[in-house]
Length: 121
Image (tube, rainbow, N blue to C red; front, side, top):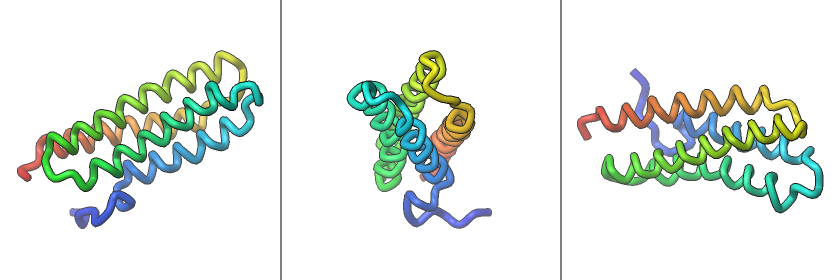
C-alpha cells in the first residue's frame, strides 16, 4: 500500500495534470500570433485550472469540499478536450501527445474522486 500524500505534489493525478499544462504551453506557443488573446489564452487558463483545482482541493478537509474542487478540475479537463479538438480542426498542430496526457488525467481524476467518495474519512 502507498504512503499517504503529504502534499498535492505527491499526487500522481496532479503530476500528470502539471505535465499536461507544460504540454499545452509548448503546443500553444506555436499557435498563430492572432490567437494570443484567444484560443492560446483560454487553453492555457483551462489547463492550469485542472492542476490548480487538484492542488486547492488537496487541503480541503471534508469530502464535499474535496469533491467540489475535483469536479471543477474535471470540468476544466472537458474544456481542454474541446480546445484540443479545435486545435486539430483549425490545423494548428498535432494534438496526439497532449491528448494522451489529458486522457490519463481524466481517468486519474475519476479514480481519485471515487476513492475520496468511498473513503471512511
